[in-house]
Amino acid sequence: MESATDMQAAVRSGAAEPRELLAEHVQRFVATHQQLNALIQPQHAEAAIAVESINPQLPLAGLPVSIKECFGVRGLRTTLGIPSRRDQFDHADAAIVARLRSLGGVVIGKSNVPQAMYLHETVNPVWGRTNHPEQPGRSPGGSSGGDAALVAAGVVPLAIGNDLAGSVRQPAHACGIPALLPSAAQLGNGGSFDTMPRFNLIQSRAGFLAGRVADLVMAAEAFEVVSQR
Image (cartoon, rainbow, N blue to C red; front, side):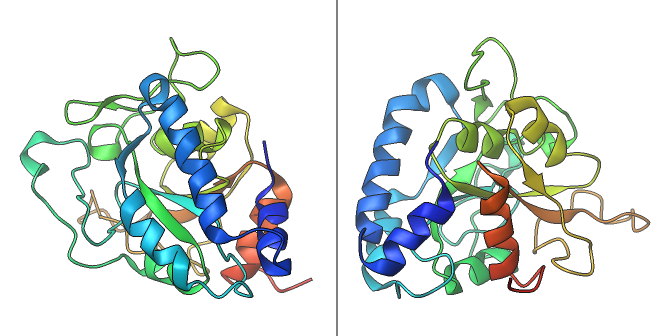
């Protein structure tokens, strides 16, 4: 698995172009999608346009990133795997998605979730079942299971999920990758869809999944979750 920190360093130094990183990861998506079914709303055409104007000195310049389906991504849908929400299009980016773009990250689409995000198995009647990247007969966990599968399979080096009761941590563990869940005071819920608006005692939190701990540190520094080293 190629490191996100190495990719970003290559873009910053001019050794790699953002369009090259995108093309490589689109190829990985094509090669694995039938088995994984994890990136259920790809946005590759829009990403190809976005990479042409990225400043290579930005902290996440050129990194392909998947977004959990509960976050708004303009032009895509937030269905939560519920059939009655098939036509719920996003008219704007969620706060964390907008911030990701401002840092140079490249949104390549939305990842699958369990129906209503209430289960630890990523399957729903809208997008179907997401499979574990190494054991296709098993689940990658949930509810950020689509993100975890994509990172573990090398389709993306970084993913943004959210977590109320283990939804980032559990699928990361199931897929053998690290994850970071900052406190509510640092990232908040990132603008994710609130599936329990009347339950205010505990709020979901946005978090990161990546292939290596160093990649999580890079994301945390970029989003100012931790101070620069």
